[in-house]
Image (cartoon, rainbow, N blue to C red):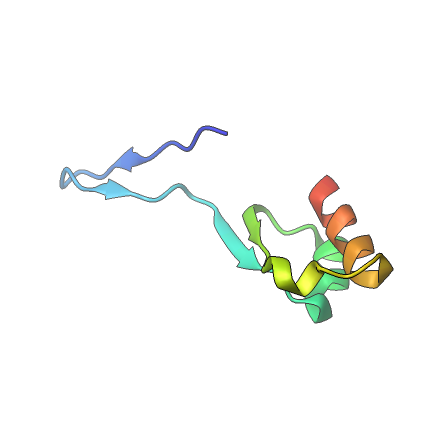
Length: 65
């Protein structure tokens, strides 16, 4: 994945015009319903170290988005 940075008129670099989100299970359905324009989704691996279940279901669906 390539990230591009924009140089502001002051010569400083600015971040791309997209934002990320720290994934919380209670917000997963809203993410899948509204499809916000996310630059990335951050997860904490220890929250997904379980065998199957809703966590993996939502993570897989959000990954497709």
